Each structure stands twice: as structure tokens, then as C-alpha cells.
Length: 275
Ligand code: PDD
Image (cartoon, rainbow, N blue to C red; front, side, top):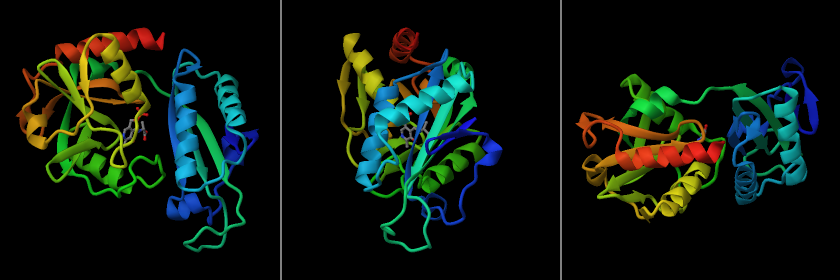
């Protein structure tokens, strides 16, 4: 089953209007939520971010956030999903094509679930990444449907046999194409501060909290490409990839080329968080 506005329906019975503004302009916002053992992980944080993203683009929610949350939980139950994801998006609805807000549309919500195992192979052994210029706009804090720059970056990574593209604006590292990026230098964790140039990752919030609880120093300051390549450890985080070591970037081996101790400690703490 999928959720279409307030209705649970079969996937084949739902359709996207050719003039849906999400489809034509990417005029909408989304969330991607992990389900572990039938439980929606960090649901409230995802819902708050959804609300904030919508607010930032002046997109009215189709109905109350509490009800959206309840419906997403019901969707997981109805589909008997144990391990996987919920994808939910809200667009500005359907109208004759015009750039400005049409004014009389009703927001359209679509949500579905997807099976998905944990990325244990990657989190255990680490991944390889490429570097690429961050060509996105200046509102990367909004989880908007406009992902073309991210798509192109990820495709470039794939072409090079890598799992992630780490983006930089000039010499400053911002984030990955679908992850937040961290370096560890002498046991201190550095990551880009929360502002308009990165997404405030839900996994990031948890990781920084766990780090501090475990007595690790966290510095929310941007670092350079050189600092990234010379770091003791590099890792990325997201709903999909959890906490994942990066062991090589372009031709440069990170640290010893093995997942680092701080990354491992955070991964262990994360295991406790998800059960
Ligand atoms: N992406 N930065 C970007 C650009 C992202 O797209 C994501 C997540 C993150 C990490 O956010 P979180 O920890 O809340 O998942 C950071 C999701 C997984 C996606 O688009 O599929």
C-alpha cells in the first residue's frame, strides 16, 4: 500500500498528474526515514525537519503533522515492514504551469515504504569517495526535491567505482551528495556547521550527541579539502548509510586505509541507539 494524501491505496491506483509542481519544478520537500524492526527511527526529528523544510518554501502541509506522522506509522504497519525505509514527499500540488505559486493549489503528499537491509558491508569495511565541486544553490538546508546537482555528483562517484561524492565550495568541504561529512584529527571530530550550505542531518544530530556523551570533542567548523585528505579518519553519515568510514578519497588513502578507532566507537554507540 502507499499513502496518497489521507488515503491508503494500492500503488497501481495512484498517479502523478502531469502538471504536479513537484514533477515539473521540483517544487516540494521530502524525508527518507529508516525503519528498524518495525519502528520508525528518529521519527519526530524527521517530521520536524519536514515541517521546517515546508515552511522555508512556504508550502502548506496538506494536513496536520501529527496526522501525517500517524499515517506514516500506519503505512509501515499495513505493509508489515520490519527493516527498510519510508519515503514521503509533499509537493505544491497541481496547476497550469507557471513559475510563481499558483495560489489555489492543494499540497499533494505521497508516501511509500521500501525494503532495505542495513549497509553492513560498507559500514564494516568503509567506502571510497571522490571529490567534486559543490555546484548546488545556497539553500541546501532545505530538504527539497531539487536533487539534480546531488544526482550528478553521485553519478560521477559511481562512474569512478566509488560510493560517495564529497562536495566542496572552493577549498571548503560542505557535505556528501547524500551524506554529512566528518574528519577526525587527534581524536577531535570536525564537521561543517549547520547553516544554509548543508542539510541538518538527523543522523548528524545523533552522532554529535553520542560523541559528546562519549567524551569526544566535537568542533562544528568547516574544514578544507587538504585537511580532509590529511585527516586521521573520515566518515560520512545518513539515514541510509548510518555511520560509514571513508577509507580512500580520489587517489588518497585516509589514515591507514582502514576504518578508524573513533569511527568504530561511534558505530558501536549507534548500535545501542537503534535497538
Ligand atoms: N539523504 N546531506 C544530504 C545532501 C542528504 O541528502 C542527506 C540524506 C544527508 C543526511 O541526512 P540524514 O542523516 O537526515 O539522512 C545529508 C537521504 C538519505 C536521501 O536523500 O535519500
